[in-house]
Image (cartoon, rainbow, N blue to C red; front, side, top):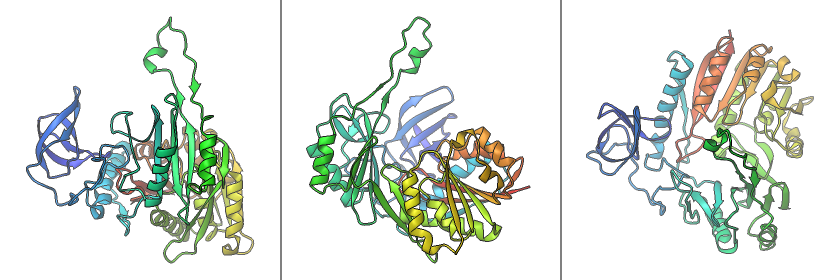
Length: 439
């Protein structure tokens, strides 16, 4: 089919209405046209892949040296010039938020990265059919990640060592998260994947339910011990068993702001790059400087990334989380005390935020909210609406969930500002920071 791209979709594909039906064209940019191969077609839309171009967008990157041919699920945005990537991503995400949340066009701010081509210090890989690597785009075929040009050299070396020395059982299904700390030491977290019953079988009235099985990691302790002994890894976690060091130290130094030290357990989420995280810290600082609160509630605090940033500006910080390491939080708190003002009080409450916010958050002057990709629950949104907070800073990595949550919050709050940060370079993902003030 012939395509002509009018704009980009949120996932990074170009949108074409050339045939009267909406097609999402992989690898095409706004302003480009050419021929595409149809991969999937449904009554209302289709999906295809560009195979030729009649004209080239000025936003297209000059070359792509990826040995995987951009067929893995790790990137998806390498065909875009790094200095234009955030603008293109933000346009699509902003349009979705405005349409889904029914908000007026208030405009938005971009916080781009200076180090566009910096190597990634984190990798999320998969184990399947005895192989380790990225999933191929659109399938569960495994592609080797040892030659990935996006990853930092230290990560590639660690992945190559695993590929050469590990013999994974074919039945094992697991995800691996690899991180580099500030000293370029590698840490890995292996987590088995549940084998779930296919949905099409769940509604058969006479079918016997299939037991949910957990793939075993019992074959990997010997590998973990060898990796630590040979100094290939500084720490490895197999589910809840630690080998070597169990913590990762991440020092964030925002430009013009005091440094903040965060201790993370292996496998804890962390912002993708230090520069991107510094932008988030700067936005938190601006939010607190203008609202001037005496207390702040940090919901979904993790190991304290934003809690410690807030404690540099506010005398009382109430952190709340369910999936985090108390040890990591307290260790980071001890390291940051010298930077806090005297009598600064930072506390952590482990609670299930899907069931609502704790009393400390109800009574805080402002709220910072940085949930996982699926956003906040309806009960949590209701509690925020009826809390005392006069302002809310919502950090989101999924636009559709943010738009849903805004529809729940905007009866009581007004949207003051939206900011987009290129948290995950060379991927279609973008971090959205929404600043809301109570009506």
